[in-house]
Each structure stands twice: as C-alpha cells, then as structure tokens.
Amino acid sequence: MKFKKKIANIITVILVTLLIISVMFMTLYRHQIATLRSVNKIDDYPIYTMDYEGTYWFDDFMNTEGMTENFNGFFNQKLSHGFIRSSFANNSESSGFCTCFVCENENGDILFCRNMESTSVPYPSIVVTTHDGTYATVGTAFLTDRPEGTFGFMRDMLTEPYFIGDGMNEAGLAISILTVPAAIVPQNDGTPLLGAEQICRLILNEAGTVEEAVALFDEFTMRVSMTQQLSFCHFFIADRSGAAVVVELHDGIVDVIEPIHDNYMTVTNFYLSSDTLSGSGQTRYNTVEAVLEESGGVMSEHDAFELLGTLDDPFIHPEWTCVYNLTTGEMSIMPNGQLDHIHEIDYSF
Image (cartoon, rainbow, N blue to C red; front, side, top):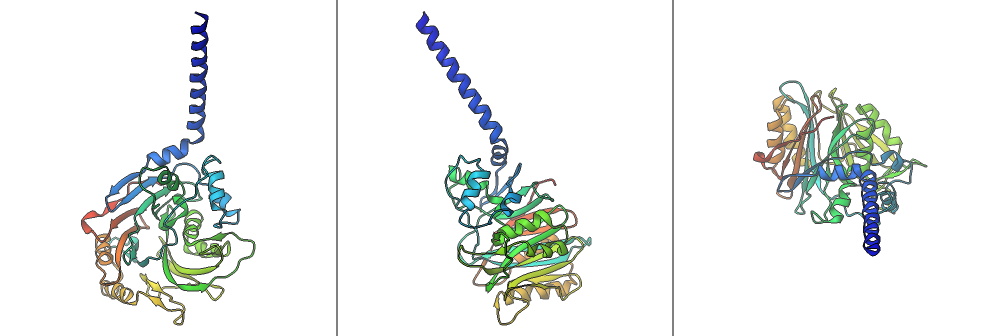
C-alpha cells in the first residue's frame, strides 16, 4: 500500500512539474506561438501571410553590429530566448529584378506598385504585418527555403520581419528594393551594417514621410556580404502626400533622385543618377512610362496589376506583384502575373 502511495506521489510530482514547465514555456513563447499560428497559405504559388505578434527586438538589433555573422547569435539570444541554436536559411539578398511605379488612381489615391521579377528561380513570398516599431507595417518578404511544416521552417518564420523586400506602414510610407550593378556605399562610422531588407525594415518602422526616410540613410552602413560594403540595389520610396524619390548609394555618397513628372514616377534596375553605372530594365521602364504618360499618371489598381503582370520581357517573369494604396492603407498581391489570383490582404493597423 505504501509502495502504491509512493508511486502515486512520484507521478503527481512529475505531472505537476510538467504542468509548470508547460505553463512557463507557453508564457515565454506566447508571442512566437501566436505568430506561428497566424501563418496562412493564401495561394499555391505559394504566398503566405503572417501577423507577427510581439517584439522582434529590432531596436536592440540596431544597437549591435547589425547584419554580420553574429546575426545567428542575436537571433538565438533574443528571438528564441537562447534555447534554439540552429542557423537561419532565408532567401535574402536575392538576385531578382523589379519594376515599380507610383501614380494616382481615379479617386486621387496614391498607389505604390511593385513587381518582384526573376529569370527562372522562383521566389515564394510571405506577407508580414508587424506592430513593433514607431509605425505598424505590412510588407512582402522572401520566404524561407526550408520545407513547410519543419522546425526550421517555423524557426525561420520568426526572422521574416528582417527580410522585407517591399512594404508600407500606417503613416502611408512605402519602400521597395530594386537591384542595380554594384557600387561603393558611404561609410558611416560607428553604425550597424544593414542589408537591403533590414534597411527597408528600419525605414518602415521609423519613417512617416519621404524626407524622414532619406534622413535615416545616415544611421547605418550598407553591406551585402561579410567582407564587402557594396550596394547592389537602389530604393524606391513614396508617401501618401504623393512625394517620391529613388535613393542610390554609389561612389561613397547617398544620391536622392526626384521625379521628373508631377504625379508619377517609374523605377527599374538601372541607375537614374549615373549613366556610367548603368543597369538593366530600360525596356520595362519605357513601357510603364508610356502607359502612365498616356493616362496622365492615373491608373486603377486592376490596371496596375495588368500592366505589371504582362510586361513584355523575354528574360524575366513576375514572381509577385503588390499594389499598396498609400491613402487608404489597403494592400493586394498577385502571384506570377495571374490576374485571376489577386489577393486583398486582410489586416488592421
């Protein structure tokens, strides 16, 4: 009888201990669990959505060296509370191409329209909403290349706010990355090293206007690899007032290019500030410019999707197309030029 009672007491202790551990685990990881539970596949291309709950410690990240080989250590310590020791595998710093423009729709709303394009390698995407900066944001990130449902897939999902390729915040400011030939970036001593996607994150979190966004380029040094501080992209930025610029980093300077038209601007993959640095995408640029000139810079959301989804370029195809309404805060995404697969993203700032 005493033996049975002893066994019962041991089982009780074990169960209570497991309960305590479970409660501690659920409390410690409640935001990460809620974030992962929000992941939803909205298109088979695939496209996912995710609402990131809680903090991802970007302010702390900005107070470190930034995007160096220590990012795994930063992630392990902050995002996983030191319990996860694997490395991330995100499709960051892609070699894709882009076509972007800003214009007005028939109601006078400001539209920020962006194609992510590639030659052959698919770039699946995830639309991530965040609420952890000065401004809440929505943006499209390069999806992890780990198999869905694996531990690595879920772990990488928690890093997705660091890998935004285009996005908009609640103040009505939008930004996108567009690749260009390599150039030497300015050196801002004592600042963190940021890749292109982390620059997007910083600007979406902290800038409410184009002017504020441009000022943030003094707060970091750009890097592409651990040994190089080069720019392989420029940045297209616009806000709900209709202001728009392209920011290019080359020859050790920050070059800000203003629009040449009153109510629209087009950007592809060549430098607008330098003929010698060149680039690609002139045909796509001219096609979009011609359509916008004919329409007086006014275009509906559907027409914007149709234009970007059917650009005539034999070497590339669209991976995803986003239209951000900077006036209303609405966002829609289309995979692979499929006009019958336009998804309006459901979120709230």
